[in-house]
Image (cartoon, rainbow, N blue to C red; front, side, top):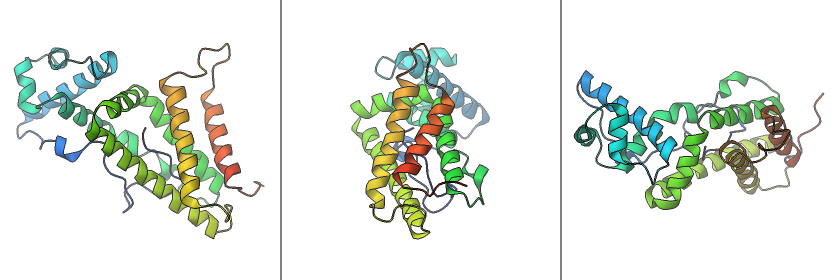
Amino acid sequence: MDSTPTVDGTHDEDDTRPPPMAPPALLRDPPATRRGVKTRAALVTAARTVFERDGYLDTRLADIAREAGCATGSFYTYFASKEEVFAAVLAEAQEDMMHPGMGRVHGTDDPYAVLEASNRAYLEAYRRNAKLMGLLEQVAHVDPVFRKFRTRRAEAFVRRNARGIADLQARGIADAGIDPLVASRALSGMVSRLAFGVLVLGDGQDDDEPLDFETLVSATTRLWANALRFPPRD
């Protein structure tokens, strides 16, 4: 994901909710009929399949329509362009990618447990959507609208993490001598790029001993905790 794990244990439904994954201007109102809803859903599902199979640049609208089992002309009833249907794919995946399960540790006083659960949930969601994350990276390089939107969303997560770090500093848990926003940019970027390298590009997965997922979670959590100078756990 272009988002990053959050460290404050709050839920995404609060007023710090980051921007949506897809530009709203590219999202049309849903169809008015049940048949229209069904056809549009089939096109979105087919679009994700074809995008992930062929890549964004090589995907043709006719291939999406064929995968959905409908005529190419029907595609234009619901979407005007490749950009619109890709935005719909992102919007469809948004719940899975923006709600990484922080409620699993809701109410705990152990900041390390919150951090570990956040990293785990983020990396699990990234792993489930790895092909789509690779596509989003590709599209951001060729489409300025998606690039700008992706940057805005990532910045929202960075600033949210900075607030979480500042709160940990105020509680005497994190190193008070570091700038929370700079720390957030560094640590959030580390996890995001590591996830892309390992889960999308397959870095470290061709060796005799491929990188274990639990090792990935443990290492990223320890790096966060060490960088912020969390006190030793009992």
